[in-house]
Image 1 (cartoon, protein in one colour):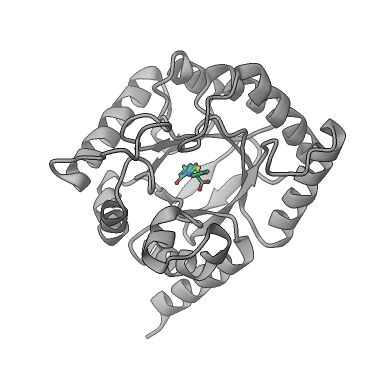
Image 2 (image 1 turned 60 degrees about the vertical axis):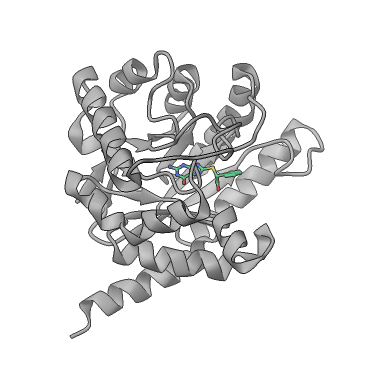
Length: 276
Ligand code: 7PM
């Protein structure tokens, strides 16, 4: 399977890592705008050096529990960083947003794909994504980021998520988005209990029925903290264990903070798969 960006192609025959670049006021010591752009750029260089195939830039409008961010604020956070990375690298950049205007501006500024935890359900998002003609990742989420962890319920977890993803794929196709541009994500951590999150990874191969590449984000998430009783900065080994399972069950792209470590895990999975 291949993912076609405007100027490059990503070979998904072997799984790859999408490195996370958070561009939020608290993710970098905020000594003014220039400093925060410089800090983000430095982080991006590290992700690239570590072997990221894609950089995912998010201005935190979609984070679980996060207060909504205004459109202008999100633009001011994200666009200068995209431009700065583009000045020195051709690495595919993904914009993590649910807002149509951010998608449009980000792609104009040099981003190459859309990563939307809201699966293009926000006003105007479907049409803008179709117009932009770039790859889109459709993620499953039950409820809204602010409240989704309160009491997630499903009558059949895997099938409910499959039905949702199928309906979003159909909406995308009807809007004119190319099938080759669609990626699916079951939404680990988005409106699911720890048990439900684990089921997702265990049964991930069921989402392969769509024949579309799967993206999975488990990196440092609270389900790992729940199992291991560890704080967010101590979850790297737990993240790698889940990454291994996700890869074995068919994931093509792993969205992660710890790119070098994730890539090692992926390479071991691949080597094992090819072993006699
Ligand atoms: C707080 C809680 C801050 C959770 C940030 C997060 C995914 C995503 C995120 C994912 C896709 C994080 C999450 N998670 N996009 N954006 N898939 N496609 O851990 O799992 O970064 S935000």
